[in-house]
Length: 118
Ligand code: FES
Image (cartoon, rainbow, N blue to C red; front, side, top):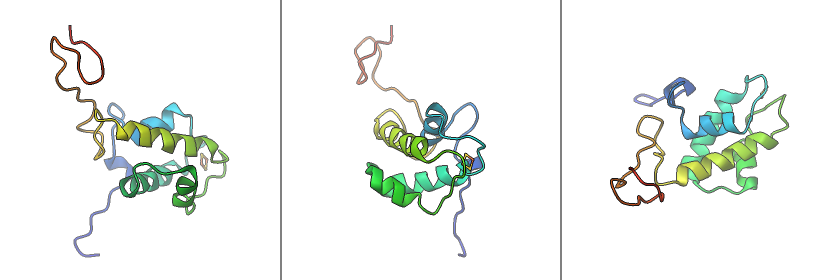
């Protein structure tokens, strides 16, 4: 364990710049009391780092060590699927919330997302 790096939910994103997984949990209402959410999100992060496009069964297996007494898991599974989709986007960094939301090459031309920077 010497030299090991420990990452907690506090290091993932901020209130003003949520990590895509945190944002997906919020947007999918994937929590009730919130007690399980830090563990669910950190386990989801590990799962998505190892497998960026997991099936529902892989998500269920990946989160099987985390218990939620409130939600029934359906919204949590949906949030992880949503997070995987968000993180697969070329506009969102997969390494955390700090370097996200960068849109490149949008000046006076259609950018890769089909938006104009007029
Ligand atoms: S939201 Fe309450 S334990 Fe999961």
